[in-house]
Image (cartoon, rainbow, N blue to C red; front, side):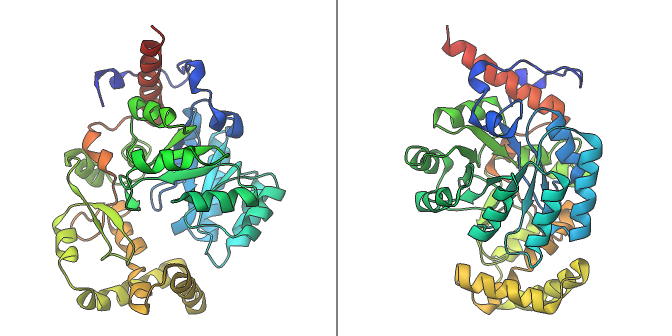
Length: 367
């Protein structure tokens, strides 16, 4: 980030946004600035979501790695610490997804986003209760289908993003969607500052969804030793691999990842089996539910059983780094914007810096 990103303001003071920043995302969700904090598993807890919402954007709880009870606790935390809108990112293939939807409706969650494509039945249930639905997509045909179900907006994520990602860069993928759909589009993948926000708006998006940048903030629960790794890395220090769970996943390069990438899948299978059993113990998920999710993966992605078992690696290996701080024995998801991150601000100061930068760009256009 450039020098004018280092501004610091009182938590009670917020910069007035340029009128052009009052986009359809702000009008739809009731937020002050057109920015969403991504619902990252193991990272986006109630504390981070509440801090992001209080900063004027849409904070988000990442429920994909949470049990039902943990989600209820995180929602309660957010409600105790902000009166502003927030979102929950949910796994649409979770065995108890409709019970989670009932919880969100009961607790007045404003927005639902989804780690996997939602079903029409799930969208209808949430929409009928007044919950704003914003799924992620990777192609125009997905947007057309979801628009027919009544979703309110879509998130389009380019290949620069951390975690599971597709092959097409945001700057190519985004205009393919914004030029061909009639619902609001939020951009993800490659954004961390005000210049990036303005680039997304210039492509026709109504806002941005930022993950890696909010992961490296003071309110993020990620251990300091892991945050330090992000500060050390450059833009070229990430790699996309399918060896973790069979799906392309952008992570930071570490000796562990280099070894994993160069290890044949059949050699990784025994460890993946152990991780699957560990995941079962941690979540309390019965074998029948794990098999059900495995069948869904086979149906949706064409996975073989080897890949289904490997998929258990993701939450377990992420936990090792994002929760336990084990740099040498886990995966560290991160977007290419990691190379642009060199500080650990509060959510408030980060958002104010982004808006300050965006305002400066817009003021320059009006000269």
